[in-house]
Length: 110
Ligand SMILES: [Zn+2]
Image (cartoon, rainbow, N blue to C red; front, side, top):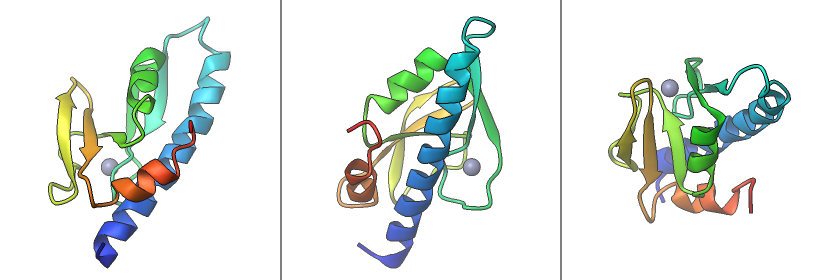
């Protein structure tokens, strides 16, 4: 894998870890609100955009080790493809042979 691909995979797994912590916090509030706020899991380390979605949507994404949630337009077409376009965000899947290897290896749910 090239350097860019490796970096993209690493950045996205960092954001996924952040979101796992946010989910844990969000679960504490789930009686008040079903909507939780997550960070964009795109490849740009300086991206600070937020995504709001129901916890059930987040769980749906996390059920796949190679899926990430990003702000629409933040995808890297060389390394990932959009599989679901939502109103406020997109779900992308890592392409085989790219950063998905890192993503699946570091899956916090496995
Ligand atoms: Zn982003």
